[in-house]
Image: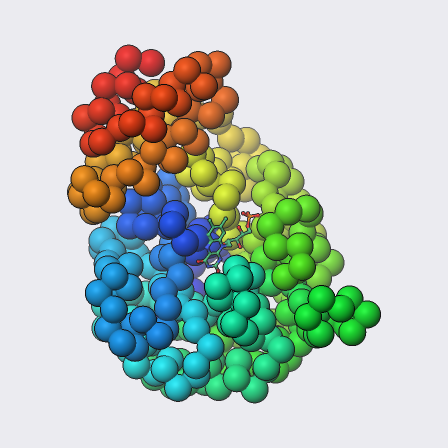
Length: 323
Ligand SMILES: Cc1cc2nc3c(=O)[nH]c(=O)nc-3n(C[C@H](O)[C@H](O)[C@H](O)COP(=O)(O)O)c2cc1C
């Protein structure tokens, strides 16, 4: 097996999977700016099992994105072998299993993070996946969730329990989002828990995720936890150059502020890649990215009306080239 995770220079700078965001165009842009690893959006195991065309489309990628990791989610362990094989057949570098999603449509039915309440199924899922494919299998989860739904005093299941339960399996890498199920997307991350997970997880690189503040602070977090890398998510909205800035800071202790011509070039390239990949119909989702790219400009709110009406890359060029 080609375990690309082992070949990456540490600290590893990665994206995380984000539904509705981390499509092929986004991943190409992140690679352009120095991401070491990129992830797809999460893809339903059930949908892959039943050959859903819409889900198979989520597996499409360009060679320049590699190493690409496809994230899959689902709670039926018996569907994983086929789903994992469908993913591996595309030639992607790795497969990730989601044990962290808090969204009601996933966790509400016992999937995502709530699978941690059924550790036997978690084990079966991971074993079934690892035994079915010849690409490295990683895991993404969160710090914890209450054992009894809604009851703090019933105790918690933590990422440490997850690592213990899977200790004998060759998990290629792990990303832990440093927040709990109960505080899914706000507030600081639990650095002590991330540090403890890093110490406990032995079979591959351990990446921290969540609550990026500044380039300096994320390097402090990396040092504090001893992690092998950082996985970035919402902080990348309109700022894919964070990868280069973090790498520069790691290498030299300095980084350059991004200039408007670079932002403009990135936004226009992003628009072209997205149009190429998803055509006129899928292009609408470029609008939210454009709003992020102009964030912080004094004229950002004046531009909003125009940016939310773009229909193709030419429209984007017209607006950005006059700024
Ligand atoms: C819009 C959106 C979609 C997400 N989709 C996924 C997903 O498909 N799989 C996953 O593991 N996490 C997903 N996440 C969680 C992120 O990968 C990440 O763990 C979380 O945003 C915390 O990092 P941050 O505070 O740096 O944004 C999503 C988050 C957001 C905001």
